[in-house]
Image (tube, rainbow, N blue to C red):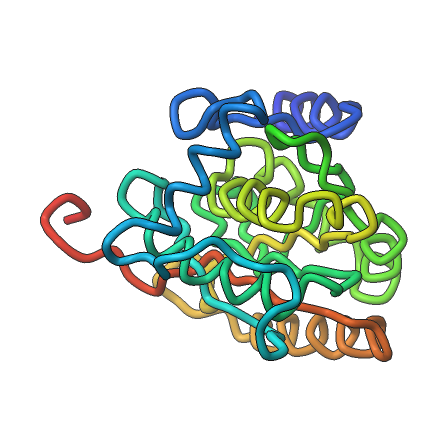
Length: 229
Protein backbone atom coordinates (compact mmCIF):
# COMPACT_ATOMS: atom_id res chain seq x y z
CA UNK A 1 0.00 0.00 0.00
CA UNK A 2 2.68 2.50 0.98
CA UNK A 3 4.78 1.69 -2.08
CA UNK A 4 1.77 2.13 -4.37
CA UNK A 5 0.84 5.42 -2.70
CA UNK A 6 4.40 6.72 -3.05
CA UNK A 7 4.46 5.71 -6.73
CA UNK A 8 1.19 7.48 -7.49
CA UNK A 9 2.31 10.59 -5.60
CA UNK A 10 5.55 10.70 -7.58
CA UNK A 11 3.64 10.35 -10.85
CA UNK A 12 1.30 13.17 -9.86
CA UNK A 13 4.15 15.50 -8.93
CA UNK A 14 6.01 14.73 -12.17
CA UNK A 15 3.21 16.18 -14.30
CA UNK A 16 3.73 19.64 -15.80
CA UNK A 17 0.20 20.64 -14.76
CA UNK A 18 -2.73 19.23 -12.79
CA UNK A 19 -4.95 18.03 -15.65
CA UNK A 20 -8.69 18.52 -15.79
CA UNK A 21 -10.56 15.49 -14.50
CA UNK A 22 -14.17 16.68 -14.86
CA UNK A 23 -14.24 17.59 -18.56
CA UNK A 24 -16.13 16.85 -20.72
CA UNK A 25 -18.70 15.37 -18.33
CA UNK A 26 -19.19 18.52 -16.21
CA UNK A 27 -18.06 21.27 -18.60
CA UNK A 28 -16.66 21.49 -22.14
CA UNK A 29 -12.91 20.92 -22.33
CA UNK A 30 -12.51 23.45 -25.16
CA UNK A 31 -12.48 27.13 -24.24
CA UNK A 32 -14.57 28.21 -27.22
CA UNK A 33 -17.40 25.99 -26.02
CA UNK A 34 -16.81 26.43 -22.29
CA UNK A 35 -16.98 30.25 -22.38
CA UNK A 36 -20.59 30.52 -23.61
CA UNK A 37 -21.65 27.59 -21.41
CA UNK A 38 -20.35 29.30 -18.26
CA UNK A 39 -21.71 32.70 -19.36
CA UNK A 40 -25.17 31.14 -19.42
CA UNK A 41 -24.96 30.60 -15.64
CA UNK A 42 -25.25 34.34 -15.05
CA UNK A 43 -28.65 34.69 -16.74
CA UNK A 44 -30.34 31.70 -15.11
CA UNK A 45 -33.50 32.55 -13.09
CA UNK A 46 -31.64 32.36 -9.77
CA UNK A 47 -28.45 33.90 -11.14
CA UNK A 48 -27.44 37.56 -11.02
CA UNK A 49 -29.17 38.34 -14.31
CA UNK A 50 -26.16 39.84 -16.08
CA UNK A 51 -22.60 39.08 -17.05
CA UNK A 52 -19.87 40.51 -14.81
CA UNK A 53 -17.91 43.65 -15.65
CA UNK A 54 -14.35 43.39 -14.39
CA UNK A 55 -13.69 45.86 -11.59
CA UNK A 56 -17.19 47.36 -11.72
CA UNK A 57 -18.22 46.55 -8.13
CA UNK A 58 -17.15 47.17 -4.55
CA UNK A 59 -14.01 45.42 -3.27
CA UNK A 60 -14.33 41.71 -2.63
CA UNK A 61 -11.94 39.98 -0.22
CA UNK A 62 -13.70 36.61 0.05
CA UNK A 63 -16.63 34.56 -1.20
CA UNK A 64 -18.12 31.18 -0.30
CA UNK A 65 -18.91 29.32 -3.51
CA UNK A 66 -20.62 25.99 -4.11
CA UNK A 67 -18.45 22.98 -4.79
CA UNK A 68 -21.21 20.81 -6.19
CA UNK A 69 -21.43 20.09 -9.93
CA UNK A 70 -22.30 22.93 -12.27
CA UNK A 71 -25.62 21.38 -13.33
CA UNK A 72 -27.02 21.78 -9.83
CA UNK A 73 -25.04 24.81 -8.64
CA UNK A 74 -24.74 26.96 -11.76
CA UNK A 75 -26.78 29.96 -10.58
CA UNK A 76 -24.98 30.13 -7.23
CA UNK A 77 -21.57 29.83 -8.91
CA UNK A 78 -22.60 32.85 -10.98
CA UNK A 79 -23.62 34.81 -7.88
CA UNK A 80 -20.26 34.12 -6.24
CA UNK A 81 -18.10 34.80 -9.28
CA UNK A 82 -19.94 37.99 -10.19
CA UNK A 83 -18.59 39.35 -6.90
CA UNK A 84 -15.11 38.01 -7.60
CA UNK A 85 -14.97 39.46 -11.11
CA UNK A 86 -16.36 42.85 -10.17
CA UNK A 87 -14.58 43.26 -6.84
CA UNK A 88 -11.32 41.32 -7.05
CA UNK A 89 -10.28 41.28 -10.71
CA UNK A 90 -7.02 43.06 -9.84
CA UNK A 91 -6.04 40.65 -7.06
CA UNK A 92 -2.64 39.10 -7.64
CA UNK A 93 -3.37 36.05 -5.45
CA UNK A 94 -6.51 33.93 -5.11
CA UNK A 95 -6.46 31.52 -2.19
CA UNK A 96 -8.71 28.63 -3.20
CA UNK A 97 -10.03 26.64 -0.23
CA UNK A 98 -11.65 23.33 -1.09
CA UNK A 99 -13.10 20.34 0.70
CA UNK A 100 -10.75 17.36 0.80
CA UNK A 101 -13.25 14.58 0.21
CA UNK A 102 -10.92 11.61 -0.02
CA UNK A 103 -7.35 12.37 0.97
CA UNK A 104 -5.61 9.12 1.83
CA UNK A 105 -3.56 10.77 4.57
CA UNK A 106 -5.44 12.44 7.40
CA UNK A 107 -4.06 15.97 7.10
CA UNK A 108 -5.92 19.21 7.92
CA UNK A 109 -4.22 21.26 5.17
CA UNK A 110 -2.89 20.07 1.82
CA UNK A 111 -1.19 22.23 -0.81
CA UNK A 112 0.03 21.44 -4.32
CA UNK A 113 2.72 23.02 -6.47
CA UNK A 114 1.06 22.18 -9.78
CA UNK A 115 -0.65 24.72 -11.99
CA UNK A 116 -4.29 23.93 -12.82
CA UNK A 117 -5.36 23.12 -16.35
CA UNK A 118 -8.69 24.66 -17.40
CA UNK A 119 -10.48 24.93 -20.75
CA UNK A 120 -8.86 28.37 -21.07
CA UNK A 121 -5.25 27.30 -20.50
CA UNK A 122 -3.29 27.11 -17.26
CA UNK A 123 -4.09 28.89 -14.02
CA UNK A 124 -0.73 29.42 -12.37
CA UNK A 125 -0.01 28.31 -8.80
CA UNK A 126 2.21 30.52 -6.62
CA UNK A 127 4.92 27.90 -6.21
CA UNK A 128 7.16 30.20 -4.16
CA UNK A 129 4.35 30.67 -1.64
CA UNK A 130 3.71 26.92 -1.46
CA UNK A 131 7.39 26.29 -0.80
CA UNK A 132 7.50 29.02 1.84
CA UNK A 133 4.53 27.49 3.65
CA UNK A 134 6.09 24.04 3.42
CA UNK A 135 9.27 25.41 5.00
CA UNK A 136 7.47 27.26 7.79
CA UNK A 137 4.65 24.80 8.51
CA UNK A 138 6.43 21.52 7.82
CA UNK A 139 6.24 18.88 5.12
CA UNK A 140 2.82 17.71 6.25
CA UNK A 141 1.20 20.44 4.15
CA UNK A 142 2.29 18.64 0.96
CA UNK A 143 2.40 15.04 2.24
CA UNK A 144 -1.17 14.42 1.05
CA UNK A 145 -0.65 16.22 -2.29
CA UNK A 146 -2.10 13.31 -4.27
CA UNK A 147 -5.51 14.30 -2.88
CA UNK A 148 -5.53 17.14 -5.43
CA UNK A 149 -5.41 14.70 -8.37
CA UNK A 150 -9.12 13.92 -8.57
CA UNK A 151 -10.64 16.46 -6.18
CA UNK A 152 -13.55 18.38 -7.72
CA UNK A 153 -13.95 21.06 -5.05
CA UNK A 154 -11.02 23.12 -6.39
CA UNK A 155 -11.30 22.22 -10.07
CA UNK A 156 -14.74 23.83 -10.28
CA UNK A 157 -13.34 27.01 -8.67
CA UNK A 158 -10.32 27.11 -10.98
CA UNK A 159 -12.46 26.85 -14.11
CA UNK A 160 -14.89 29.58 -13.00
CA UNK A 161 -12.11 31.87 -11.82
CA UNK A 162 -10.14 31.52 -15.05
CA UNK A 163 -13.29 32.20 -17.04
CA UNK A 164 -14.34 35.39 -15.28
CA UNK A 165 -10.82 36.83 -15.11
CA UNK A 166 -10.22 36.28 -18.81
CA UNK A 167 -6.87 37.76 -19.93
CA UNK A 168 -6.19 39.05 -16.39
CA UNK A 169 -5.73 35.46 -15.25
CA UNK A 170 -2.27 35.46 -16.84
CA UNK A 171 -0.99 37.82 -14.12
CA UNK A 172 -2.86 36.24 -11.22
CA UNK A 173 -1.64 33.35 -9.09
CA UNK A 174 -3.58 30.82 -7.05
CA UNK A 175 -2.84 28.99 -3.80
CA UNK A 176 -4.79 25.69 -3.95
CA UNK A 177 -5.62 24.51 -0.41
CA UNK A 178 -7.53 21.35 0.40
CA UNK A 179 -9.05 21.30 3.89
CA UNK A 180 -9.52 18.03 5.75
CA UNK A 181 -11.93 17.43 8.65
CA UNK A 182 -11.25 19.92 11.41
CA UNK A 183 -11.41 17.19 14.05
CA UNK A 184 -9.77 14.43 12.05
CA UNK A 185 -11.40 11.41 10.42
CA UNK A 186 -11.55 9.18 13.49
CA UNK A 187 -14.22 9.20 16.19
CA UNK A 188 -11.67 10.63 18.63
CA UNK A 189 -10.77 14.28 17.83
CA UNK A 190 -7.09 14.90 17.20
CA UNK A 191 -5.92 17.42 19.85
CA UNK A 192 -3.10 18.60 17.57
CA UNK A 193 -5.41 19.73 14.78
CA UNK A 194 -6.49 23.17 16.07
CA UNK A 195 -2.85 24.11 16.57
CA UNK A 196 -1.88 22.88 13.09
CA UNK A 197 -4.65 24.89 11.47
CA UNK A 198 -3.89 28.02 13.51
CA UNK A 199 -0.18 27.79 12.66
CA UNK A 200 -0.93 27.49 8.95
CA UNK A 201 -3.27 30.48 9.00
CA UNK A 202 -0.72 32.58 10.88
CA UNK A 203 2.05 31.72 8.43
CA UNK A 204 -0.23 32.37 5.46
CA UNK A 205 -1.32 35.75 6.82
CA UNK A 206 2.28 36.76 7.37
CA UNK A 207 3.39 35.54 3.94
CA UNK A 208 0.70 37.45 1.98
CA UNK A 209 0.90 40.67 3.97
CA UNK A 210 0.82 43.63 1.60
CA UNK A 211 -0.54 41.63 -1.33
CA UNK A 212 -3.98 42.00 -2.90
CA UNK A 213 -5.58 38.68 -1.95
CA UNK A 214 -9.04 37.23 -2.53
CA UNK A 215 -10.16 34.07 -0.71
CA UNK A 216 -12.54 31.69 -2.49
CA UNK A 217 -13.98 28.82 -0.46
CA UNK A 218 -15.44 25.93 -2.43
CA UNK A 219 -17.45 24.95 0.60
CA UNK A 220 -21.22 25.21 0.39
CA UNK A 221 -21.44 24.11 4.02
CA UNK A 222 -23.93 21.26 3.57
CA UNK A 223 -25.39 18.87 1.03
CA UNK A 224 -29.13 18.86 1.66
CA UNK A 225 -31.85 16.60 0.34
CA UNK A 226 -32.36 12.89 -0.28
CA UNK A 227 -29.73 12.73 -3.03
CA UNK A 228 -26.98 13.08 -0.42
CA UNK A 229 -28.40 10.95 2.39
